[in-house]
Amino acid sequence: MADNSSLPWVEKYRPTEIKDIVGNEETVSRLESISKDGNLPNIIITGPPGIGKTTSILCLAAKLLGPKYKEGVYELNASDDRTLDVVRDKIKTFAEKKVTLPPGRHKIIILDEADSMTSGSQQALRRIMEIHSNTTRFALACNQSTKIIEPIQSRCAVLRFTRLSDSQILKRLREVAAFENVTYTDDGMEALLFAADGDMRQALNNLQATYSGFGHVNQQNVNKVVDIPHPTVIKELIGACCKGSFNEAYPFLTKLWKEGYSSIDIISTLFRITKIYAMPEYQKLEFLKEIGFCNLRASSGVNTLVQLSGLLSRLCIVSENMKK
Image (cartoon, rainbow, N blue to C red; front, side, top):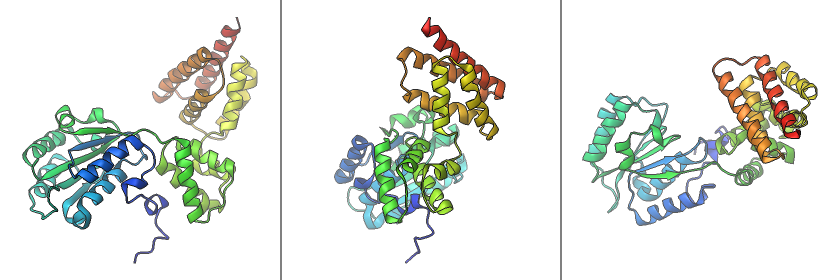
């Protein structure tokens, strides 16, 4: 038996049955009913990274094919070459292959990160889906279903996954921490949830990295590992901007800048905390609009301290105008 101790926890604790998948209950229940009926359509599972798309497909395939899983499933992930030639050769060859499966079951071809396939590859795939529809089913996982060509979308049932809630991720983190004898504090778990932002994979990776690096999971250790601006400093900065006090807000910005955080990291953390910060709705919308414009400029390469200082001044002006 293989030694599991060196496995990444995200693989070690990957669900093997559909019922163990965390979150997206409605969509997972549809997969559960497909596994019972055995009537698998071509499917596209779409949603943000780290929420269980690929895991769901693998669990479904294992349930449908059972002991014939290895013979009846062909998987290509993002690291594999998926050019036009590969689609024409490897995928077509597998689709034509004769495999003895349980009655009413089909071979399954799993394509991870399908939205990164070229248009030509997708056109070739569409033709294979058409020709081999009696024997083969396709399961595509992607972050953006809009990048899949229309002819493929129309041949598939589209299942949408959403980000996981903090409570769902927290429950799983505590289970893994108990299995691995990880010591942690509540503020450490909060920091993991904030950094993950609904991404289970990232939460588990950060938990393992923090524990293997420091031996204990608390807020300070997590922040060293995830390397994002400290949420408390950002909250103080937003509070000063809400009062319209640029002089009070600016030292917080320079503190983060001197610690070496990039403009994009500061802006994205600012955006996320503004969304949950207690302030009047109109003020919040104006703050988010200004932060969005600043993010656009920073993404275009204008990412200096002057640009961030300008953002603070505009946020303070919004607050001052509200007082008037």
